Length: 582
Image (cartoon, rainbow, N blue to C red):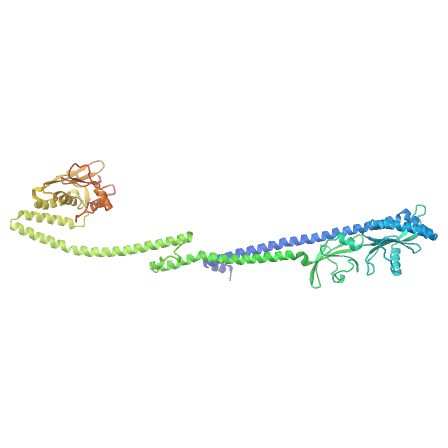
């Protein structure tokens, strides 16, 4: 599978899977990087510990070597002392027993004074040329074989210092050398005796060497320190890496940290052998704990990341399900609330809310459209049905008009003709906007009918300039106002009532007024009608209907109002635009 196919597969994955993979990769890379950095830091730390251990051993070995050099200088100072030279020269000449005893006592006192000043010396011994021993300090009697060994080693040195290593019978490190005569008057280097310094190597090393680990001092195959070593020298790999000064070796199935220094003075090798776990137990524990903690954090973060991705994509999945339902036209189920009825106010929650509002709006529009289509069907049906009734009514009125004329009933004929004209223009819906002249013709037909009914009680006047007759206005605007005036002003009294239609034009627009001499209209009637506080008892076209139609035709700035400044009767004023535009 190539890289491109892998990228395509990743591109088409679900968002929750992408998020899970992304979070896992980020945490894995972070964990790997942190572990590498940790291992690098710990390796530096380990190296510093190794170097420090090696340096400590170097300092310890240097301190031990310095102390041993000082003791060597002490041996040289003793044998070079003029008084010691004279005493040993006198003893070599075989003096009397008394003189030998006195000289020996002087020599022992001097050796005691030297040994008392040195904390790391067991004793100081001198074997004179006659084989007699003179000792000061913690004296250990030597058997003849040990004595002979020491004298042979000292003789091999030919005056130089020689070391004799500890053994089972004597745990002391012995520094020995021959004493030669080099008096100012007699520099013949004659043998005067052998000097033996028994050094407490255990105390010296314990005071100077580090407490951690086991310090060993070896020379070839001889173990100088300790007297009872914990390790078989043969099990230690040789040589230890001299370049580093330390290395880790496996001894008896256990790892040990071994640092070594080789003395340039004595040629001895100083070893510090420490169990590896004793040094690095805590470090190893910290390493393991850090790795364990990071793995635990990795698992926890992965689980939280998966939960986060599922929590993030679950609303999207639910939204997709609802979209599919909406796609199939099932808007009711698509608009259901999620469990609990609460939507988070984040981007996805807002998307769900917007989708739900859209579905509600679409559903409402569908229902409204369905209801409107039903209404249109019903209206079309009623319109088709209503076309039958006017024709039948017109024919009937024509028959009545013909009979009235035949019987010479001019009033009936006039009334029927006016009624037919009025009905014809009222029922005709083809022209919703007509001119003021046409509206006044309808009013005249209505007045003709009403004058026959009320005779002299109805006084009608028309005061409209001729130039306003071409003004457009909604059909049946003045006729309903005329009808209201007759209903509320004329029918409620037996006195004559004068109804006047006036018209005038100003800079603000064109105005028409219907005035009557009746009881008048209460103040604020239009506002109370619109708020629903008052309902009309009439069955015709009301004032609000006329006002709404004018506003729809010409704008909110126009309509009808009641002239509350009228001294008597009522005055309804219509405001129309000044221009000719509809």
